[in-house]
Image 1 (cartoon, rainbow, N blue to C red):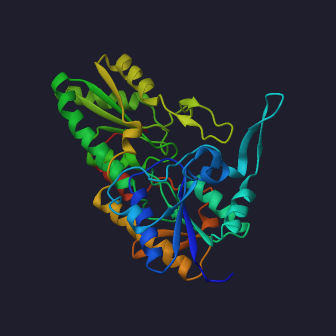
Image 2 (tube, rainbow, N blue to C red; image 1 turned 60 degrees about the vertical axis):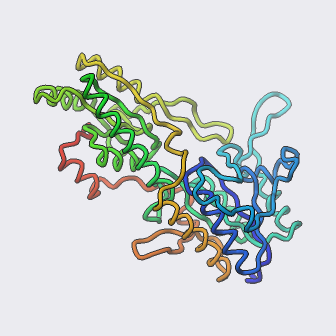
Image 3 (cartoon, one colour; image 1 turned 90 degrees about the vertical axis):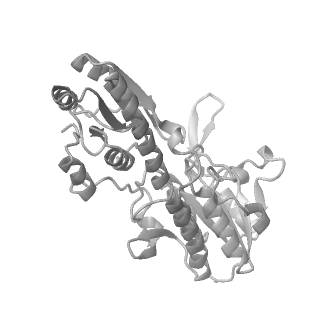
Length: 369
């Protein structure tokens, strides 16, 4: 594979996260400093697969002027989507049934036809799985890890996580005062389908009294006992923080919608279920607060902004050095490169021997076990 690069493309896939625009800005500027042109693909790969949806172009030229001042903005100027995986694209048959087809060759054809030499793919596990498949088909690809959930393997952290934790912690700070004033139990639901990083970090930082997360199946009676114990000590309010993918001891998760047609399953409702059950068990006035997509929005923290800028520049350096099929990752000593094949389809759960988890236990936080 020749190292000569003149034009690259960048896209953002999956759910949005604070810091996406900072990555885009960094990629564009680092590429321009090498004399490369940079193009942005709209809404994942939809700008290529559905050009008719974009009167101004599904793939747009990105210049220094286009990205000036966007690093502090939330969201993504390119748009994003978590629907319509090009490897398993759902189509409706004449009989009304749905089947999946592989449209990835259309992406490869577009790159060849428009003389795009490489792709910087910014996304989570699903987007990086697609990026790895495109690499295996011959496209030069470098991935940038993105998820507020911090559940991507092989990287110490991902941009967006710090911002989500900071916001969730601020919300807990506010809820302490109102919960104490009314002697209520506050059940706060945060994102975290398969990993409880946000719940764990925000829960400890925000002084939650119970944290429920996917890695530890919970017995609701243990949580109720914690609340009753606090009442017995004269502390007449409690904060329970729960990740959307938390599992009770029967193993059942709350689904808003199952996975189908290229869409990821939607979790939610666990907060309401727990709130109602705790009210019945303790007799206390209980309120449920779902932070949900608020965790995705807003400006990135300084930490996330810097991480995003580092990731974008590192992705361009990797392409300049002739790399492909890798993801830039943040290690304890700096930015590393890891193979996309080692990341695709893998998830990083909170280790049960985690120092952070043990910190929570030492502080007396109930984890429902």
